Length: 341
Length: 221
Image (cartoon, rainbow over all chains, first blue to last red; front, side, top):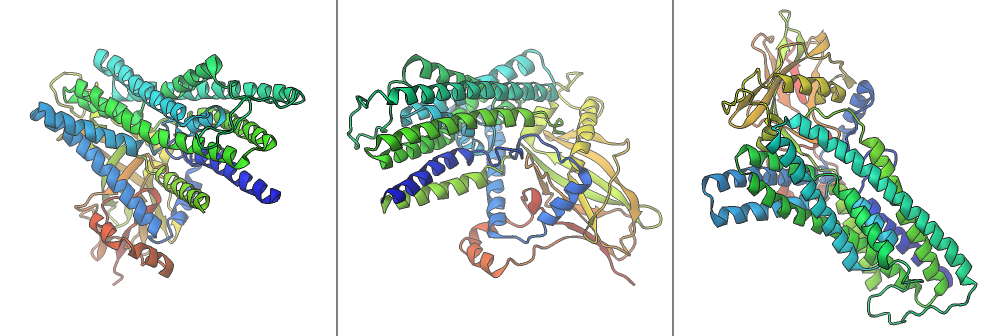
C-alpha cells in the first residue's frame, strides 16, 4: 500500500512537471520551434529534412495541415477585419476585429514565446492557488501587449523606422527577457534551497504546524503555508511577470504595424489588448494545470507530513530549476542568425 | 477511477499542446517557381517568386516609402531585398532539391533579385542557381520549399506553382508529387475525419516537412 502510494505520488509529481514542459517542445539542448535557430550545416540539414519527409501523409500530417489552415484563415481574416473597419467603420466592424483578435490570441499563444513554460514552472515552484496562477498569466500577457504597443509607437509611429529595425529591436527585447527570466530563476533556486535547508533544521522542532486538515476546501496540504505568502512572494511574482512581459508579443507587433499602415493605429491597439486577453487564457490554462497537479499531489499525500514535505521540496526546487534552465536555454538560443523575413 | 480519468485527460491535453506548439508561423508565403534552363536544355536553377501575406508585407514595408508617394518602388525596396537575400542564405533559401535521393547543392543568387509591391503584398523575385547544371532528361530532379523551423509558412501557389522556362526540352514537365496512401493503421485513424480534411483542399497549406516535392521529369524518347 505504501509502495503504491509512492508510485502514484511520483507519477503525479512527474505529470505536474510535464504540464510545464509541454509548453516548450524541447526545453534543453535543441531550440524550441520558432526560436530563431538556423540549420547548422546546409548539406546535412537538407539530407535530414528530406529523409524526414519520406514518410507519407499520416493522421498527424493531416491534422498539422488543418492547424496551419486555421491559422492562415485567422491571419487573413484579421487583415480583412482591419480593412473593413477602415472602410465601414462603426461598432459592428470594431467588435468583429476585437473578437477575431481575441481568438487569434488564444490560438497564437499556443506557439512558443508567450511565457507559458516559464509562468507554469514559476507557478509550480512558488504558487499554491489557482487564482494566483491565473492572475500572473493575465498580468504577463498584459505587459507583453503594452511592450508591443510601446515598441511600435516609438519606432514606427514616432520615428517611421523600417520593419527590419523593429524586428531587430524585438530581438533585443527578447534576449533581455530571457536573461531576466534566468535571473529570476536563480533567485528562485537560491530561496528554495534556503527554505529547504532551514526547514530541515526546523523539523527537529516538533510538528506544530497550524494548518487546517479540511481537504475539501481545495487548499493544498503544504508545510509552512505562511512562508510563501507576503512580500517576498509578491515581489517574485512581479519579477517573473516583468521578465516574461518585456518581450513584446510578436503577433501583436506585426498586426499593429499593419493597422498603422492602414491609418488605423488605435484599432491596432485595441486589437492588441483583445489579443492579450486570448493569450492570457491559453497561458493560464497551463498555469492552472500546473497548480492543479501540484494540489492533486498534496491531496494524495494526505495526512502524511513526510510526503507533503517531500513533494513541496521536490516540486519547488524542480520548478525553480526549470525557470532558470528555460531562461538560460532561451537566452542562448536567441542569438541565432537574423531571420530573412 | 476519477483520478485515473483526470490523469488521462491531463496527458491528452499535453499531447495536443505539444503538437500545436509547432505550428506558429508569423509569415505566410505563396511560392511560384520557374525552372530555368540553359541552351543545352539542362536545368540551371530556380527562379522564385515569393508573395508574402498582407500583414507581413505591411510590416516589412514599414518606413520604406522614402519619397512619400504612398507606393513602394523597386529602388525603395532594394535595401530590404538585399537584407532578405543575405539572411536567406543562412536558411538554405528554404529550397531543398535532390536527385536520386541525394541533396543538390545550390549557389547564392546572383544580382537581379528584387522586391515588388502590388495590392498590398510584397513579392520577392530571385534566381537560385544549381551549382552544376542538371539534365532532367537523364536524372529526375525534385525540389521542395519549406521552413524547417516553422516560422515561415510556405505554400505553393494554387495557380501554376511551378513552370518550365520556355526553352526547356520538349517532353519535359513539372508535377507535384502526390502523397502516397497512408499505411493501413494510419488510414483507419484518418478515416475518422476524412471529410474534414478533404474540405481543406490539396496543396493549399503545408507545414515544413510535409511540403510535397515538385518533380521535373522528361519523357525519354
